[in-house]
Image 1: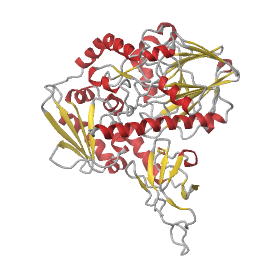
Image 2: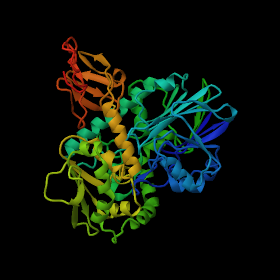
Image 3: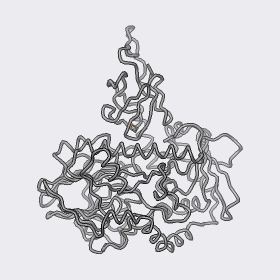
Length: 534
Ligand code: FES
């Protein structure tokens, strides 16, 4: 099996039974904020795009580059389609001209022509990607590869059960706006960033250890930020709170925990994998490349400046009445929302900075009041400050996912009262009837699901499944004193009270080992609720 690195999370897999192109991303994403690094725009895409199969893991714009797919990828390619609850991925691909779809069933191995086997695991919670993220497992002639990209399955046991994996590709770096955009003192931002950076690596080591593949490939990030306004997000300033460590940092950190089987793929690197060997060739020396990272970034910044300028010029739509349009689009959804609106629980304010950089228009999405209106000097749960032009553009293009556009752009600042609230972001990625209904249904099912199994961790008996997204705490739970951390997303819980210290509304069931279970009910009445703390 041959794997060609094509940048970021993208790769081309070649076997005698066919080739698969995964997640090709070249054009800037999220309001021209993210660019692939190292630059992959000069690869021979005409040739790389002539493939038998195409796999798009999900609709995030650093995985799904519509312009590139349209221009460079053969429309004869058969699309390996993850089993997602909505048809958006298929619809967007059909619009680009793809017609041949292999509709996979999540977690089912299928054999394609010539003995090429694939399996796609689709994750479908409203917090997985834009309503869905996935991993691709491939086997040919006894060689197995898992392209996990940035999916976060609760564990990798399913893949491990299919036989030893030889190549494991996974994300290790950040892909979010936290904590950089928060209006916090620099010291706090650095501390939160460092925590996040450490957690990202911990999660990566956990996955690597789960699968124990022969070779590990750090992929799917980080992007680079070439606009002068965002340049500070590149990890080139020795800031330990930067959440975007690159592949060379990965290799150093991996070595510290004993990792010796890491392989970095630059765009154009080619690796030949057999059951017991690997041979990789690079277009340039990898260590030297990363040693000169600043120079590479500066060169890219100059080269891409016109692209950023052209994009920026397309965002302003002064004819749009933002308040009126937000009302029209969002109020019907507020009206229908039960779980998300309740989860947000308060008003969310958008401060929109005008073209002159000074004037500000404040609009509130009032979740309890089910309306969009002018800000009325009230306390709000979240406040976002961004350019009015960005919101105009979202309304102009009828964007249904403001996470996969505005928030990932990092072109905003934020302040909040209290803890992280996942429902705020879940709502703003569901600005369509189809998505909202799906998310509401998912939370409904999720909240009703009773997961009665308990496990013992240290001195505590806790529910087996993480209250956040059901990670198995026998694998991901770490108890330190009275606190439990779930390493999948790093959420923390205070065990004596059961309170979640990271997000709103995720109580954990816990009691000290040796104490009776709270729902042991000698009277024979209905048991205490699953959320009752010890
Ligand atoms: S599943 Fe997300 S922190 Fe546990």
